[in-house]
Image (tube, rainbow, N blue to C red; front, side, top):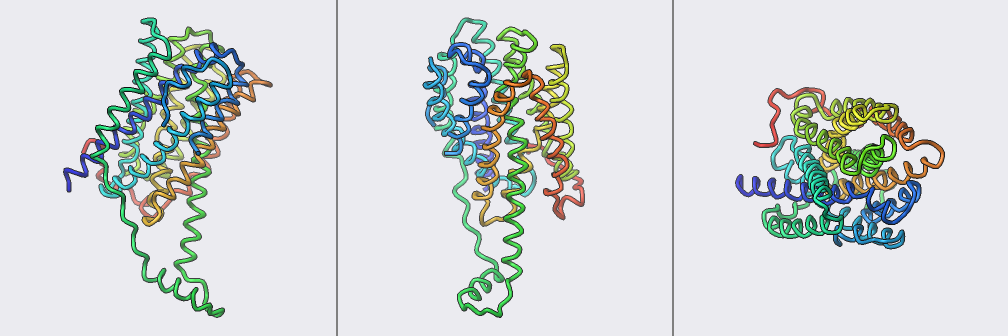
Length: 389
């Protein structure tokens, strides 16, 4: 059992890194796609909504690279988003089951490998661009390799988690409902379920805000360096790479920090750090301030989404998948809204100044971080575990 659990954990790492690589391969080619199709920042923001809509509803990564007009790009993003969303929700639900089996925080480690994928995509894209390879060839190669790796890894995944039997109090509550006794007061179990459902939706709202921030960084970081600070296309690709690398470092540490200080502290202090970073990006006039700001932004956001997904998965063992889907689904609304909102705001203010909206969202997330607080958060643990154990 120990061996199969370790295999399932490694296979989950594989799927997270594949998802990060596929998304990163698209992200670093956004400036080239915008230039090839011949659209403005605002129009691009509207089209990027379709990527998120597809995630809420894969096909191949190469489709956006083949687009030659806005309609073709719209369809490609819709299909690519559908695949990305299905993969993201399912792999996070599986990660919750693995974390439960381990009995300690490991979720951030999975998300760290997603960020590793983003870094790899940025490096591959920069190298391919320097070597003269086009976006279509690069994205096709990454997509093809990902399909093979995914098929090889699927056998190691855990089987579907069994549905937990209802508690004794819940059964009595159900029997009471059937009798229709008007004098029977609502059971504590039903009240607890309603409270838990409300908490899950609050987690989803926080996920919307932080994933909106992450989506904005994914889709606008490279364009910010190129269009605001005048960087070359290959240099601009490293803006997202810097952001993703900082997220990787943060997520490698976040499980230990959550085990020692609690998930609430990770969410609150991470959101504050992200607010400082994106403010530096918005107001800094130099290339080094932009890279420093994107690094801080990635470091701050790194532990936020894993804590929210993990809390949703652990809220109700019998509905872990459904709760993760709610939080991830509303989070994807943020993913689709972020690029679009930033794009629309470029009608009235400069691109870098639109990022001040993200500062506001990070501050709001820090204020609302208390929704994660549980009894286990009140007592720090003395033996944090690393992702490699």
